[in-house]
Structures are given as structure tokens and as C-alpha cells.
Image 1 (cartoon, rainbow, N blue to C red):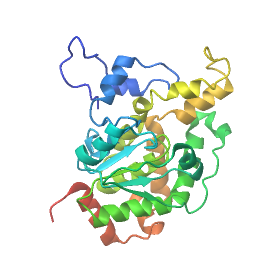
Image 2: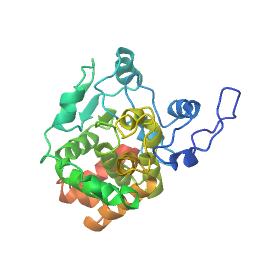
Image 3: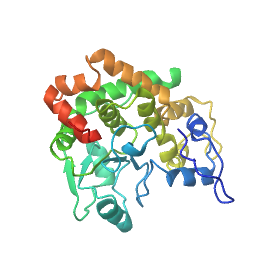
Length: 292
């Protein structure tokens, strides 16, 4: 699923994106590779915004292109980024999935022509237990956090799916602090209802490894021993697993949702969000624009 498909030139780095996505989060990525990947589909360049991409442009996605976008916080978006968001991408509605503390830290921008939807969670999201991120690549901790988000963020997710059901002609973007946690849960639900395969959904999740490459240095500065931290330390292992986005984590989450809700994402939409089978059919049609 590499996005580096064009013939390499003197300016184009040669790399296998799938192999890049498997690298350790603490490993430095080549800056030229990161720059090239971020300027290639499914990423979209929005100045001042990290980890922004079109989930319909992920290789193998059945979601139509140019309709559903995801990203990290928009709180620091530049003026030309606002223009790109509203005019070139045509985004009409942005859904803020951030926690109260994240909104206070990052802020919410004003963008002409774009409606920002800011909702309250069903309950406050519990702080992650970092002890659960020490073993098995942090999968136990990530499953607990994602499960909590299925509960706490239900009002956010319901609002997004209502928008998709009722407005097939209005592109949307949803975002959280890094675009990797609650955003990834929602993207996975959307992908699965649309009909994307688990492998495609996991690949979309793993792309945050590149999408957040420029942000990880902020985290590394907080590790003991910086600028030469001990990567085998407990805190480094917690950071690696908490901040990483391995595809196997998303595969495990999809299995978890399938076991907890009959029908997986569609079962969650019915049981937790209150959608009917007819609603799910309309959502799926608008995501894929299938003909009747």
C-alpha cells in the first residue's frame, strides 16, 4: 500500500511506505521520506495542521474521495490552511472530538464558510493507565482507551453519522488532539460501515506514524536523558507504545468491536448510537455513493 508509486527522480526518495510504517516510533524517519509521504495521497497538506488526510484516498478504501477528512487539532491552522480547508477541499463541517482540556490548550479556530461542531462527551474520558502500555506493544492499554472512547465519545460519533446520513454533498473533517486516538476510532467505524477491509482500516490507522513524525520530537524532549534518552527505560517504552500506531493494534480493535457488538461497527451504531438498519444503509450509500 505504498504511496510512493511514481518513478523516482533525483529529488524523489525511494522507499517502501509499508516498511516505514513498521518502524519503531522512537526511530528517526528520514526527513525527505516524511516530506514526500506527507505530500502524497492519502495525506492532504493543510498548513498548520498535522496528520491530515482523506480517508477515501487510502489505498483500497471504499469511501469516496473528497468527502471524509481526518486530522490532528486545527487550533494552530494558518490563514492559507483555512483557505485550503474551505475552498480547495470544500469542507463544510468540522467536528471537534477533543477533550475539554485539549480544547482549552489548542483552541478552536474560526474559518469562513466552515461550521465547527463542538459537543459534550457522554462522560469524561478516563486518563490512560500507562502501566498497560508496557507489554504487548501497548495493545492492552490502547484497547482500554478505545473502549472508553466508544462510550465517552458516543455523542460526537452520533453527530458525525447523522451528518453523513443527511448530507451526502457536504464534505466533513473530524479531529482530536493528535488525530490518532478518538479520530482513529471514528475513522475505523466509518470505514467498516462503508465496507473497507480490516487491512485497509489498519493501514489508515498506521499512517499516523508518518503523519505525526514531526510532532514526536516534542514528546522525546520530555524523556529522561534528553537529548540522548535511554530508549529502554520504562518511560520510553510507555511513550513508544502509547504514541505508536501499529496496524496490529487496529486489527485487534476491530476484533474487539466485532465481539462486543453483533455486526461490529454497524452493531455499535445501532446499540449505542440509536441508528436503525435503514439509517445504516443511507450512511453506507452516502459514504460510497452506491447506486440503488
